[in-house]
Each structure stands twice: as structure tokens, then as C-alpha cells.
Length: 208
Ligand SMILES: [Fe+2]
Ligand SMILES: [Fe+2]
Image (cartoon, rainbow, N blue to C red):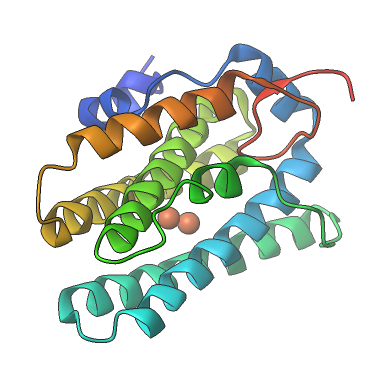
């Protein structure tokens, strides 16, 4: 009972997401745990790389630089933890194609600053919040070792969601609520529309 999603996740994070992960995705994840871990490792590495690319592009924002540097280090640590867990389980790390999710959101990011930065930060908040929600929903269904690991990730990805949202509000020159609502609609489509490719952030599973 203490592992319910509501107990694991802050109410504002659940309120930020436009929909819950479909049960069908949870079932697919439990049936494809090796693939889930391989894609999870790739997501952690990509999260670090996204944070670092913001550090290269926006060198004149000390708050952003500090937060992104911390975030990149944490994501790389997560990457190492997933790889170690995979090694212990005899799962070979290999390159697999990314899901449509992150690109499906980033495709709507404005081309010009300052809106570009705000959009990238809002997209970051959605990716972190969704990751957090999926970890939390999986935890009650996983073996003890993986459940314990995912409990630590729920906490840090939850902080990353807060940081991204805080930074988006910090750098915005006007209210960002409309922009959040716009990306929330896109996010819901990506989560609920049929998706033949199972990944950590994939949509509604369908037979490939
Ligand atoms: Fe992470
Ligand atoms: Fe994260």
C-alpha cells in the first residue's frame, strides 16, 4: 500500500502530467524488462547530454549552468547504475533506436530565443515527470533489487522535474501556462496514441 503511485509521487507532479501511463504499457514493460533497461540506460545518457548541450548554448546564465551541471552528473551516475545492474543480470548493452517521444516533443520547440530556451526547459520537465511517473507505477510490480533502485530514481527525477519547471519560469518573460498546456496536449498524444515500438517512453502498445 505504501508503494501506491500517489504515495510515491508528489501531487503537483501528477497534476502536471496530462494523463496516467496506460496499464497496457505497464504490462508490456514487465514482459520486456531487458529492452526496458537498455532503453532506460540510453535515456539516462541522453538526459546528461541534453543538460550539457544547454551548458554550451547558454553560457551567460549562471543558475542554468549550475543546475545543468549537477543534473548531468546525476544522470551519468544513473547511467552507470543501470549498466551495472544490466551486467549483473547478463543483459548486453546494445544500441537501439530511440522512441518517438522526445523528438515528438522537441519538434514543437520554438526556433528563436528566448522562447526556445523556455520551451526546451518545459519539454525537460515533461520528460522528467513522465519518467518519474513510470518508475513509480512499475515499482510495485518489480523484483526487490530493481524496485529499490527505481525508488531512488523517483526521488531524483522528481527533483529534475522541479528544477526544469523552476528554470522555465525563471527565464520566461511572461506566463508559461499556455505553453505548458500546449506541450501537455502533445505529451498526452504521444503517451496514448498507438505505438508499435516499445520503449521507456513509448505510447499505447500495439502488435508490431
Ligand atoms: Fe536519471
Ligand atoms: Fe532526470
